[in-house]
Length: 183
Image 1 (cartoon, rainbow, N blue to C red):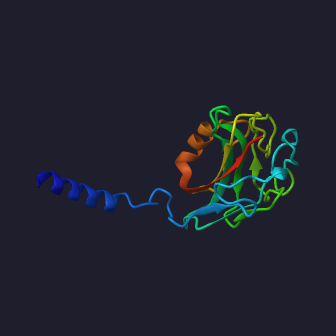
Image 2 (image 1 turned 90 degrees about the horizontal axis):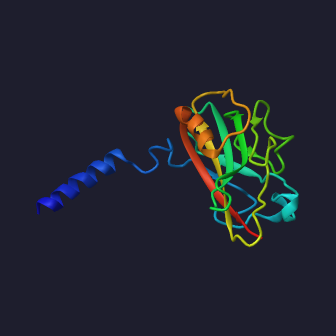
Image 3 (image 1 turned 120 degrees about the vertical axis):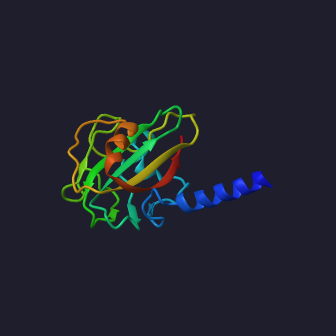
């Protein structure tokens, strides 16, 4: 009986103090793409020319961010073991009034003030999927970060872990969606 009581107390405490979505700042903060469902296939036009595509950045939309949000950042990376967290896109300083990026926004259509950083391919902007043939499905994780600062002073190239570490002191919440591609 004592063990059961301890489990009940611990469960109640965790339920009170670790509410789902509490870290995210808002349980309704979500990101999606009109081009593919979460967990679905990324259409070919969004992949690199070497993989048969046009390298268009996919359309993305988000909503439900924490009220205190002063800017957004965005990342896309491939955590597949072969890709080793290959960074496909990093964007900072997206204004808080912006809740979508149109198809092909990278390079010419990012919001005023937003900055695209250098990806693992070595250029600033979106670099679409181009997994090695025969390595199976690769997940491409798109994440939008709600930040409590209006502007970050970053430039250059970062790994996904470095990028998230730099955002961590300003993070109010984040939301992700994942698309898959293979060849």
